[in-house]
Length: 75
Image (tube, rainbow, N blue to C red):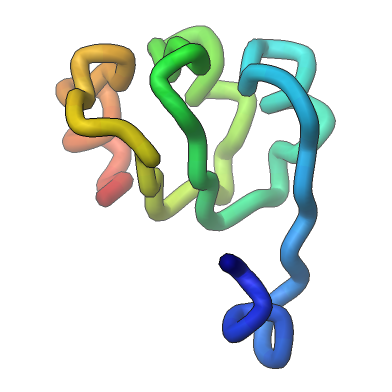
């Protein structure tokens, strides 16, 4: 649950996958928590200039462009 974070952070829950349009709509997000169905590639991640952290709720991470994240300093 995200309730402990809500005391110090704005937490926004969005239904569906994190695609380019959703990323653009939430471009000021500093952190995202996604599942494997969201393909976090360069096109999606470039829409979120404030992003600093990706938390994936899956066992794998092959849906995340790790090279792009490293270049941008996204953990």
